[in-house]
Length: 213
Image 1 (cartoon, helix red, strand yellow):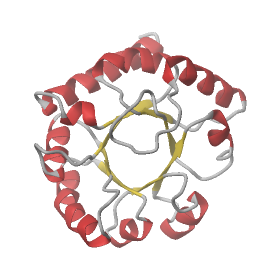
Image 2 (cartoon, helix red, strand yellow; image 1 turned 45 degrees about the vertical axis):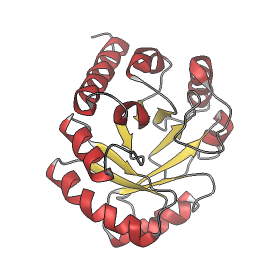
Image 3 (cartoon, rainbow, N blue to C red; image 1 turned 60 degrees about the vertical axis):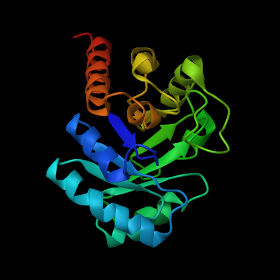
């Protein structure tokens, strides 16, 4: 499971970023434009919605629940200061994908019994993509949080996020998380299409190892 999170770059437009990762095989895009107006966000979304449809990829918006409903995308990713996920679920309906940000096991435990589809848990390491970063979790932190939440009977898929690169995939997946979210590592790669392919191959191998195949 790979989620690509868009991030403004000097080299590419958001649509170009999305086109490249889709070409590399990614099937899950998060449109994240923190400082954009709703109209700017809407215009960018109009460019990438057809790309996602052509490639049968899921598209979620970072926050912007009203726009997600208006534009009929698959769902939203909600930060801690965004709309309450229960309210988002009420507004968006049963079919919508709703993800939430978490930084600790306690964060995930608060979601127990809520109709949430996944958590983005991070940061793995320091990253320039986000401001006001929470304490870095690292490999040991992920292992502990996965153990603690599974022991509490919370089976919510956990997606690791925050400065992850191709070289980290194997070790990160060994902690028991269900996938990774990436942004800068892909955009800044010499060949983002090929890099995306390699990330997906590494994820596939990591899952195969875990399931003993």
